Image 1 (cartoon, rainbow, N blue to C red):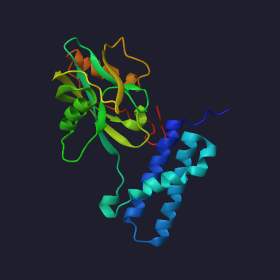
Image 2: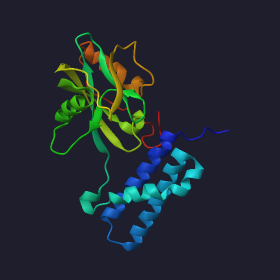
Image 3: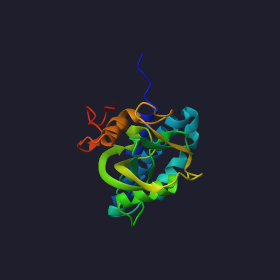
Image 4: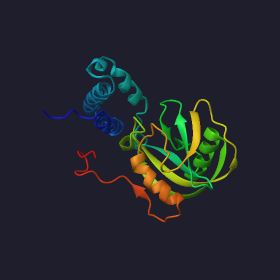
Length: 229
């Protein structure tokens, strides 16, 4: 008997189909083609609903279609691409890593946030860490580029730029809407549950230990589209 398709894979397929359909709607001049793309969008909604709520949830899949359609633009503005976020791997003088427990999921992860218009990526890092934890940090260098859906930290397409940062000031004051707890951890004392630690812990703690490595990123799937390691 074949294994069931993982929820993460179904979500990726759904979002990819939705991206193709929305981009098509944004560029097409043909009403016939627009209707075909809208049908694809409905199928993508069914897939995502089934992934997250089982077949019983398909009846509510129109909600996903409605949300996707809100972002449809015309021409280049309608070309669907992943959102961009940042992550902050903050180290203290004891060689520990700052992690927060997210209020929305209870998962432990380094501070993260969406990239706001008008800020450079490192500036968003500084802003997010201060807002979420009360700490002041200095970005040192970019150490990773991660696909949020593959990492398992996002249900929508996003690329996360992970910066290694040095603690420079401030005191712990967690944002009650962003996180429920925060603390400093070594490689051997990571809290549970974390997400994606098998992917980011090695490169982050290597940076904390002073090692110089190239920027890491997700391995190519083999084959690129169907594989899902």
